[in-house]
Length: 314
Ligand SMILES: *[C@@H]1O[C@H](CO)[C@@H](O)[C@H](O)[C@H]1NC(C)=O
Ligand SMILES: *[C@@H]1O[C@H](CO)[C@@H](O)[C@H](O)[C@H]1NC(C)=O
Ligand SMILES: *[C@@H]1O[C@H](CO)[C@@H](O)[C@H](O)[C@H]1NC(C)=O
Ligand SMILES: *[C@@H]1O[C@H](CO)[C@@H](O)[C@H](O)[C@H]1NC(C)=O
Ligand SMILES: *[C@@H]1O[C@H](CO)[C@@H](O)[C@H](O)[C@H]1NC(C)=O
Ligand SMILES: *[C@@H]1O[C@H](CO)[C@@H](O)[C@H](O)[C@H]1NC(C)=O
Image 1: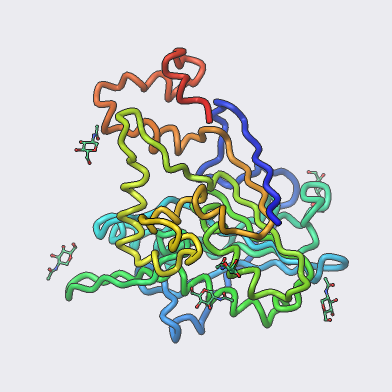
Image 2 (image 1 turned 120 degrees about the horizontal axis):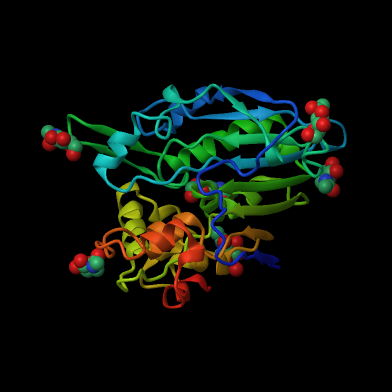
């Protein structure tokens, strides 16, 4: 049974694409990083070969058997040069990441700020593979080395959490924002299968519903971008086979709009009609707007003319 609720806010540009999704007040809750030491044995490493990591804050009381997992977001790298760059940053290596993360929003432990999940086990999965936790490949030409092991990282983290109580979960929510929101679609089935069959498992994607849509020059620029990403990082083998079997272009199953038909986990999809990322990168990327006709509209949606606002509908 599929339960989908899509919340759409038309043409607002207040979205939180690469940012944490709550502006919070109250006590700060810094949570230490856990490196997954067993991951190396399974080849589950970040772009640069460093160990993957997560942050866990334990649940308590009535929430002690409930789990919320949140995939960190932060774009993608879809060619060798951008992945080599990324491998030297906090987006591609745990070496450069903050070792303490402040848990806020739905990760907060404050009941008045986070009434639904404050006492659950709350986990943030750090993002260091550049492919929404879904690749399985490697680049090695003798002088440069890159690991594309997002799928293995996902599995290594889950296997680290299962004995910490996740295997006894009663309720579980797999969530994420942006590239992390996309990761929820790619892993909902696998997540459900790894939890007790009587557990209540749901997913929440925040600003992760990236559309396969034409840009203003009628090119499918996001499709090309994801095509390169899926090929580079060896993602196709990890996409839902029920989806990939159904189409002559299996790489398209990386897009939620195609993958969703084959997902049975209950889903809450939170997405603005056009968030900043999709407006600025998928629909009006810089290349087809060399003269900057869209600049004013991009900076201030209220300045978009009627002919342009045609892009502000679903
Ligand atoms: C929880 O958040 C509320 C609202 O911001 C704040 O007043 C309160 O001090 C916080 N409680 C704790 C224990 O941090
Ligand atoms: C390996 O790839 C990198 C990045 O593309 C390139 O700079 C380097 O010259 C390549 N090395 C060899 C031996 O081809
Ligand atoms: C699921 O089954 C186990 C084993 O029978 C039981 O201990 C647990 O309470 C059940 N969980 C739920 C959410 O009903
Ligand atoms: C999770 O995904 C991996 C890789 O596709 C697969 O090997 C594994 O069997 C899956 N686990 C479950 C429970 O579906
Ligand atoms: C694929 O479809 C079959 C039959 O409906 C189902 O049993 C299976 O769980 C599906 N697999 C995935 C990965 O969704
Ligand atoms: C649209 O795509 C075609 C084919 O890939 C390419 O030749 C053309 O330059 C693209 N147009 C723009 C404006 O990017």
